[in-house]
Image: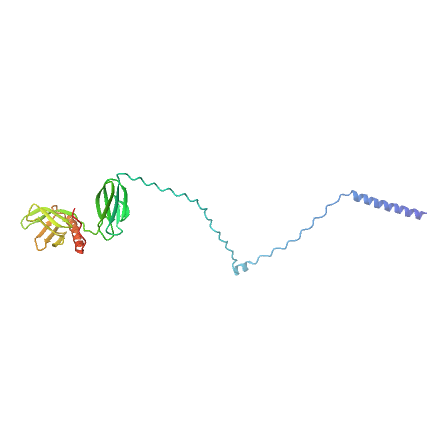
Length: 265
C-alpha cells in the first residue's frame, strides 16, 4: 500500500515538474538568433622588400590615351555683301578707249590704275586729266589730256622717241661770249641766240661730239664737220647741264637703234 502511494506521489510530482518547466519556458522572452559571422577576408600580401624595389626594374605607368582636340563649332557663313551699284554714267561724261603699241602696257588715269592696254575708262568727267602709260623695257609716258563728252580712242606709242628738253646756256667764244637757249626734240638740237652767227640747228645724229664735263661745268657740242661749241650754265650749275645731256643722249641712242621719232607738237 505504501509502495503504491509512493509511485503515485512520484508520478504526480514528476508531472508537476514538467508542467512548471513548460510554464517557465513559455514565460521566458526569446533571444535573437546570433548573427552569422562574416567570412574572413584573405590577408593582403606583404609588400616586397625595399632592396627588391631598388634592384628590380622600375614599374612603368601606362601613358594616358591622347584626347582628340575639340573642334570649334562651324560658324554660320555670312551672306555675301551685295556689290555696290555702279554709278549711272553722266550724259556729259567721256568714254576713253586706251591702247598702246607695246602689249601689256599699264594704264593709269589720274594715278588710278585702270588695267593693261587695251582698256576702257567709262564715265570720265570732262576736263583735264593726267594719263600715264608704262611698260617694262620702255620709257613711261605721262601726258595731260582734255576729255570731252562721248567716246575717244587714244593710242599711246611707247616705241616712239619722245624728247622735249631745253636749257639756258652761255656760249664762250675765243673773245667774249653770248647767251642763248639749247632746245632738243626728236627732230634735232638747235641753239637759239640773238647772235645769228652762232645759232644752229642739226639732227641729233648729225653731231660729231656731244659730251658733258661735270667738273669743268661745260657741255661740248661739235656739229658734223662743223663748228665747235662750249656751253656753260649761266649760274654755274653743272646739274642742269648733266640732266640735259642725259636726256638728249638717251634719245640719240634710241634713234641709232631705229626707234621712230615722235611727231613734233
